[in-house]
Image 1 (cartoon, rainbow, N blue to C red):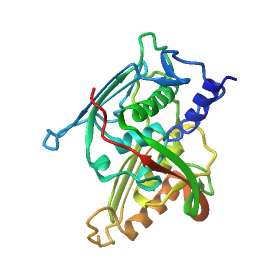
Image 2 (cartoon, helix red, strand yellow; image 1 turned 180 degrees about the vertical axis):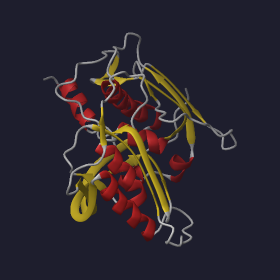
Image 3 (cartoon, rainbow, N blue to C red; image 1 turned 90 degrees about the vertical axis):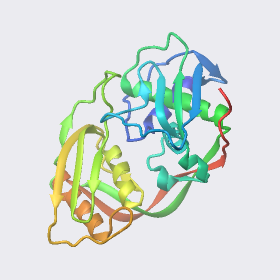
Length: 285
């Protein structure tokens, strides 16, 4: 196995949301490469003014397009770094990002050389992820490193009685809507819905609300659909300012167990953190 194929495989195994390819991935576009690293051939980056109109995106929107393209009119540097390095929960795991990089949005369009091969959705995402690393290095001067740190985490495992989610087929059509999880929560009600996601995607979504890394230890590799909700009219909501309180988090954990068949337990673990060593405003087009 050559170094390029090995790097693509390793990068694919770490895709945000837990998508994993079985077996070796085919060698993809030769295109623009520097020291074996895939590169976009054409890149356009424009800062979005703070007074720009609000942008709306359809359900299931993904900036990764077929043919190795990336297009997003409201891309944040935080989000691009998280995508490029498969950081499941950047609000927890990505450190050292300057304030301007969190607040500024960009209109980003990136395309590879002509002749980029037809790939499955997962393979296409894996290659675009690698090309995004090159974009960030060249245009934003990004330098990052990762390190594992011990700490308290949540372990997600299959609860007694097994999972209660419907298994769905993973589409190979790269134009299909990407999998994901939508969550609407407060201290009284909750709604979790997905037309097809991996358990790792769900773990990342839960970590956002729980403010704690969630480790997927279920061993489940498929895609699942669910539509669960709950309502606790006895509870009196407590003003939080942002997010939900302990009551709402307790309801979330208990309903994930009772309705999805997945339990969350606090354990000592090791979490991979990514530290930004250098980043700057993008160079002109």
